[in-house]
Image (cartoon, rainbow, N blue to C red):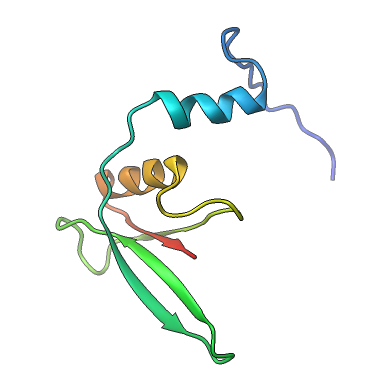
Length: 98
């Protein structure tokens, strides 16, 4: 696959991917997100936990955004909470799969 140039230039005060990950997690306020957890049983006797972002203003036919976090992530990760808050504010039903 060819490499493409995104044109992204990091701010001078925030060089490198490590700082760009740490600074938002530690210095920016986290949105308040309420979740409703569902546990789904699987055919191999395991379970899948699904955290739905709770909001009262969305209907059952609103679009759905599914977030699959990484190995160290969860629905309480700063990026998951930010994404779920964005979903709730924009008429999207958000969920995080565990």
